[in-house]
Image (cartoon, rainbow, N blue to C red; front, top):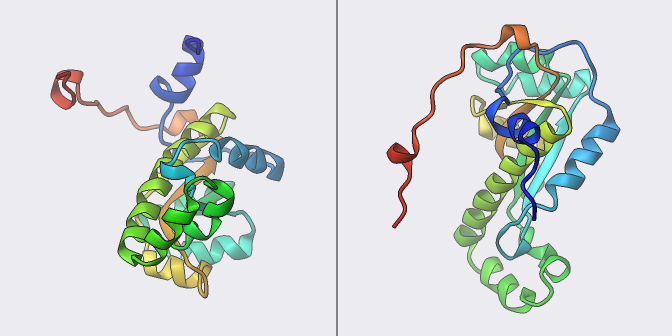
Amino acid sequence: MSIIAKESIAQLFTDARTHNVWLDKPVTDETLRELYDLVKWGPTSANTTPARIVFVKSPEAKAKLIECMAPGNVDKTRTAPVTAIIAYDLKFYEHLPKLFPNGAEKMVPMFSGDAAKAAGAAHMNSSLQGGYFILAARALGLDCGPMAGFDAQKVNDTFFAGTEWRVNFICNLGYGDQDKLFPRNPRLSFDEAARII
């Protein structure tokens, strides 16, 4: 692999910001499909790919989601063109015969017989996929506003009743208002957060 252009690195990482204020510019369904088609290629353990995504766009669905949000996240969610519920499927292993045919015979019984192990794997791998989701969105020119301030049980009851899907986190999507960004917060240095041994 070759190193990607510095402009692309900036778009994905160094210049990218978390947005809370959105321009009145729609995100097309085609773009959302393109976004998923990038996310699905990110690696997960044993290709489990447990993430499930619900793109909330309609006024009716947005109203239901807003009822689940913490007060500080209501306005930013209301005004975002799209809000993605990044969830995970507790029974992701049912798809392993398709997704991981060489190991499904061993792994399906392992996960189906241990709900805690399956839940842990689903949460961890959907979190990985959530990171890919943000990078893929940025690669397509979208801005992101990932959030943890919501009533998880209420989200699950409202959007996933009768299923094995559970919310991981929520991410607003659209085209952010650059003029409304907060000053950028610092990050830990290499020496503070990493080591080579």
